[in-house]
Length: 466
Image 1: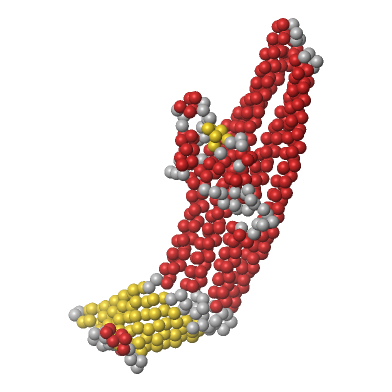
Image 2 (image 1 turned 90 degrees about the horizontal axis):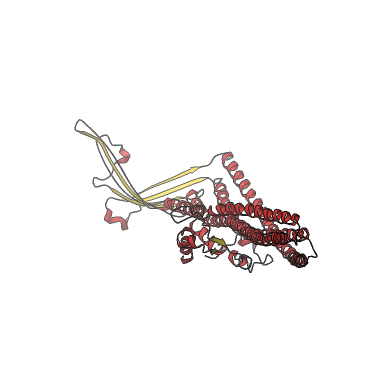
């Protein structure tokens, strides 16, 4: 948390630091940690877990005990037609069994005879159960299981969403670093052009250099100024793109200040920052990938739905039995001769609706299984391709580093010959242009290398350290 506070201070300070042009480095690790802590999309991704928790709470509510009171009364011209009171306490269980205790008190002139009970009321306690359809699995059981699986799936999806925003944020940082390096490169070569221009102009006034050399030196100087201006505006644009990922805790966007610069040593810490320093695709377990785990939870969810639909093929056989007693203190001494029981049986003849629902559930399940298999192969191949690409970048970097060194050697040799009068300014500028081009290629190659590291981070959905 301290490093986040430091970043906030650096991002907003315009006083002493801005006035004295004191630069401060924002590393990739600090930047991504700040994005992970405060970016609104990351917070939005966290809401998917809250959604899963809310659905789980709702599903558990189906098993909450219930108190129910029904009272019905009719009074007309001082005559009580009927007064009916029925109070019940129900306890649903995980399986298709429900316990119930109730009190019933009825009176009135026109009361239905079957509703006649003792004057002090009638107490009852019993159980109801679904013995076939709805016993091993029912809508309440399925909803609870699916809510738990949905919550686990949402946790995996949340990690994928956070990984996605960190990936996009890292690309913005790498672009910022690339444009900063390009601007620094052109600043350095601008100094060389200024020195040569002044030396050529002085040589012209002293009679050692022709006027055409000053023209060529001036063209080179203006070309360097032009390239520097282009690099400067690219850096400004990349800084603004980077600012899209910088927010405060109260959802206030942050604008990156000019005195904040990227870490030019990023190449040495990128693996540690992305937590891929010890990553090996040969030891990579595809079953632990969040995408695969998310699909697996989805498959389990659909399997619960399939089992529920298959259960609807069974007949409905609901039974209930209630002991009855005229007094509540006799609840432990119910007489089996006083009871209320019932049985309900139902079976559609063709079961076309039930069989159709079961087929649709199987189709959805198989479709997700196919998706899971495709995702496994796709992720594995993508990670393998990225690893091969990273190896190629290492080889390319070795070649390009030698090219840069050799061009630098040629330029220094040509400059010595130029000041000894054995070469021309045209040759010096030509050597320098080649060196600039090779260094630009090196910066682009480094940027591509960073982007590929970020692709690996995204493809494997690796969590960064807080």
